[in-house]
Image (cartoon, rainbow, N blue to C red; front, top):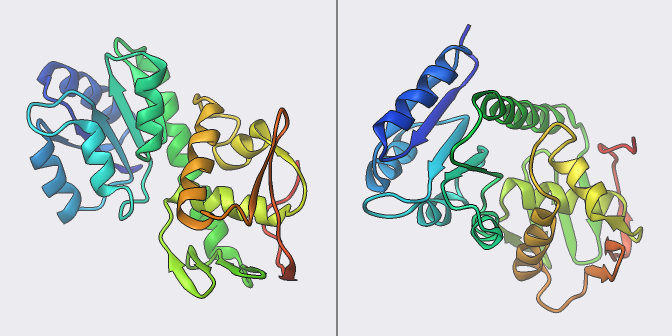
Length: 241
C-alpha cells in the first residue's frame, strides 16, 4: 500500500539510492533530482508529501530551494547535510525547513523522522477538515483554520504551515504565557526529533509578517511567548494535554 510520495534532492547518487531503498522498503513512492533546477521543475509540476533536500548542490543550494518554494509548498521539508554547525541549522529553519539531519545518518532515525513528519502533516489536515467553525477573531486579527488563511487589519497574510499552526495555537491560548517547549510539542509533536530553538526562529518570522509593531506577540523573557489580543469570538480545536 502506497504511503506517500517523497522527493529526494541530492547530487550524490549513492546517497539517493540508499535513501530510495530505505523509503521504498517502507512502501513510499520516491522521486529523485540531482540538482536544484530539476528539483524546482518537479516541485512545480508534481505534488509531494515530503521533501528531503541536500544543502550542497551543483547549481542552486538547498537553502535557496527552500526559500523559493516555502510560501507555496506546505509539505514537510527535511534538510540533509554534512554541515552540522548550529548556524547552518538555524538558516535552514529560517528558510522554512521542518527538520535537519546531518550526514552520516542512521537509517532507522531517518525513517523515524520521515514517518513522524508525515503523521503530523496528516493530523494537521484532519484537524482542518474536521473543524466546523474554525475561525478565531481578535481585534485586528482573523484566523481561519479551515482555509489556513490569516488576515491582519483585513489584509491577507501568507504564512507557512508551521507559522500558521504556531499562531493558531497561541491565539487559542491568548494572553497566557506559553513556553517554547509547549509550542514545540503542540505544533511539531513529541515524536519529532527537532530542536525547540526552531520555535524562536518561527516566532521571529511570524513577527516580521504580522507584527512589525509588536502589537500581538510578546516575549516573556526567561519563560516564553504570549499572544496579546482583545477577543471578539473564538472556537477551540487545540486542547491542553
